[in-house]
Image (cartoon, rainbow, N blue to C red; front, side):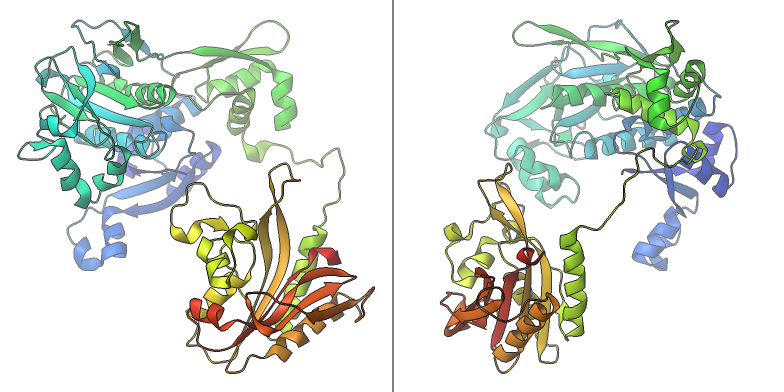
Length: 576
């Protein structure tokens, strides 16, 4: 969930009412938000960098509010205040409209103009912060959409969105003192703590996107940096907003969010100047769309799913408080719900039903017993796992919990096996070499845990009971989970008898007697992971369930261990 930081006094001034911290926390809860923290810039710096760094910092009280990830309209002070005011029925949800420009603006990108806007320091900071919140949220760190904002009075249309080789692009980027080529900029920003995270989006591309005005002035090189020439300031009156994207739907939503949040500061509030976008094939589109749509649903649908019994008129009023202007259509209990451009999160009737529940108040919903009676019970496999964990711990072994993902080397080369024979599920785009495949056995995780704890007093006795994943063509997903038990004993001597004794204890707990037919037994086997002649295969009721033995010296050394180690690895699912 995104966290929005707002100054308390500024928030209360905009709301037109002062609240105690407890009252505002309750208001947030009613609206479906969470007041995460009450702090200040000084307190944050003191906590993170020490009291010396915090000297002179602002001690203005900040509210940190957690906002649902799909509510892009609440990511700034303006949207938050507007939503709360409508919710408290102190304000009607505004109607947004677009007007034709007085001057020709024909950019080749999704764009709009905020004309005759008035900035204060707080509004300006909120405007910049909203862009950053959108970049991190719906724009997916600029991979889907990149936002550019420019002082329209410093540039002249029409604007051209094109692509050129990096060596052919030269301009002065934002807050820099000299010009760079695009290639030089990519090298320059590799050490920038903020922008270096976005370079990978385009650094390997033969052509870089670029936006020019009619005089050849660079507006921006999306998604990396804007030009310095058109940067906005507190004195900016007319803002040209462009969004370049790989996802047009996300670009439309992003543009709608910015203009609806800040159009209230224009001379004509909630009015946005449209921009024409001309595509190479001659198609002409006008943005922003600011599209309203209507959904029809019954009051009975909402009553049944929320668990309330309200009239259609009452439900319509509840939805109107959530910025969804609603009215009863006159045909039974059908309700016409208007979805504004600020509510891109509403895509189904269930989203509307959820807003009705929020407005009604979750605490006001009568708590009742479900009509269908069911008895919950722990899954037998999980119950067996918990029982075994307790008794293995009582036997002197320490439980470990290791990653389900590992490297190919961990489950293959280090265990002296071929990766093709492991039936491992591979991750298509792993972030690191440590998370290439899903583990096919628990042993590598335990051996890595031993390696990380070599300084602990000997002997080291570890166990884990968890799932492994194996390819299985008979399953609809192509793989299956398998619950396994693995334990290791690490000491100056191999301790095979300790592991063998653990096997006997486990079988005793599972009420499986020694025997070849209906019981369990072990017999000599060869496995490349274990020392030759020191490995046994474990059978239960005539079926192989795993191995135990002394690990091969090569396996021990590959996991950076220096002493003998014995291990057991068995499947516990047959014992259910």
